[in-house]
Length: 415
Ligand code: GLU
Image (spheres, rainbow, N blue to C red):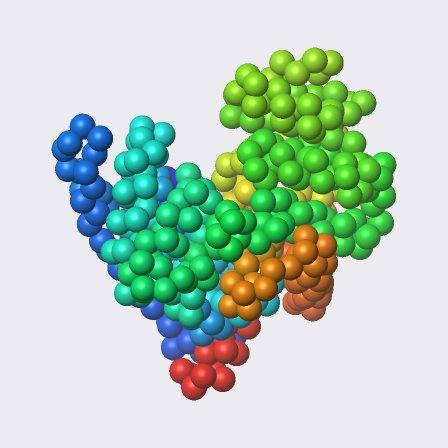
């Protein structure tokens, strides 16, 4: 996150859409506040025998459309305002893909890179037990996020099940397959994003088979995006970067070879038959599709007029600043906004919840085809709103999502 207060930013975006939707002042005010915010202290026995007290939060923003849903971040610079903003964005994200869930988010201030596996297990178990009164399959369902992973989800599910004295697989998603995870969760974020890219390309008349693709960031989302762009569309990945730098070859890079190189050396940099490229240069390459899949605020007013891509698919959260957004819109660059583009993860999390309730598990093909339908419908709902209101795709995504939340609030009789 930038130095700006993320929660104030999320409120500014809400205000803009409240004006477009002509929301009643009282309704707008209700949407400006999270419904619940729990702060917990987490004393943990460290490996050296000392006790350390960590601080954690769980924010439930709005549950008009269903149980709240959203990840748990373990981050040294976590703040409650970041968690509140992310909980608001989860509310809009679940609504834009029309899954029957509200939005939430959790965070623990800690540095997992400096903790042993035992310490992380004790912290994971302590956190879920400390928030156990407000979570549950029909209340609030956490998931992996920054620096948390399926192993931790399994520990948390186990701890919550012990407290509940019964198996409660559906309390959390992103679990390993052995304990109620879903097939297709691993690449869901990238796959969902590429389904929206396919729809955008068709709308714009871009032939993805002959398209050049650049991917900034080579973590889970970036790697799968590169791999699936080749597998699903036959596109050519011409450049990828990670936090240490990047590689380019206009004749094409094999995403799998780049991944292997990263596993072996810690970075994609130095892969055979490639030239170096920086994290700034990759954004300005002459490609059809640019996928920012790393950090926030990388496309700014300084480089927005140099972006040559026809489609920018935001797999990262917040890669484009508000001013850059306006410039891209004026220049006719088609932006698929973050909380639409990266909603595939939470969509398959929702499928995981459904399977946990059913106690019956789907094939990978079924997960893919249902994800495709959700992402495709969401993309077209947003595109239509952008045409109807004559607004950019990001504002349109907010308008679609906020409108759906407000309808649920009205139908429940809250307003
Ligand atoms: N942390 C992911 C997100 O922000 C997934 C959330 C979930 O699966 O509940 O979209």
